[in-house]
Length: 198
Image (tube, rainbow, N blue to C red; front, side, top):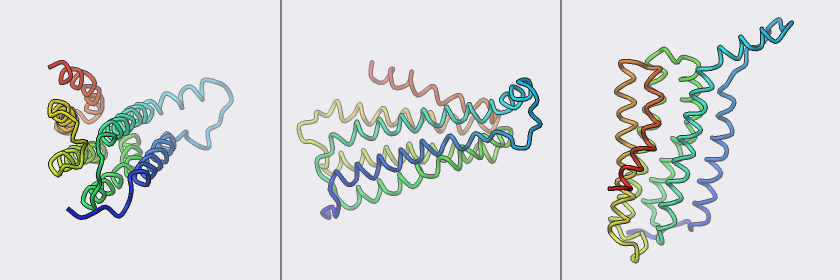
């Protein structure tokens, strides 16, 4: 195991910075149409009505990125040692976090086209899978706190498995109903509660 060239504080700062920028840029995926001849509120209301698909995708993406941020930090607090492999996996994971505004914009602009929606789902599937790999690597290579019991280690792993399964399920559903598939991410919440209960 090679010794890390960065300390925890630098990694945490980088993670928080990329998340903050990505979550802020997400709002730019909602594009209010320019050049409208606005003479009354009806015109504005009709324009906003057409933005509903973009707004739904925005809220879904923002909520999911928030979940990833919470899950990462709740796991990272148990990581007491870092090595270069852990850092590179984290950097690769952050690359896909930074990609989220693009895939969200693509999905919001073309919600009825499978290719656009698929890009969104693939992005989240990669994010959830890499986070699972990150935790599996940390626990297997003794990077986590030795005092952490195996039941907690397994619970954290199973929560990440739920994330992967839901993202994969949403991707599969997109082949049948691209627009509806975006809503399947809300299954993450009951999935996590179920895992914690059993």
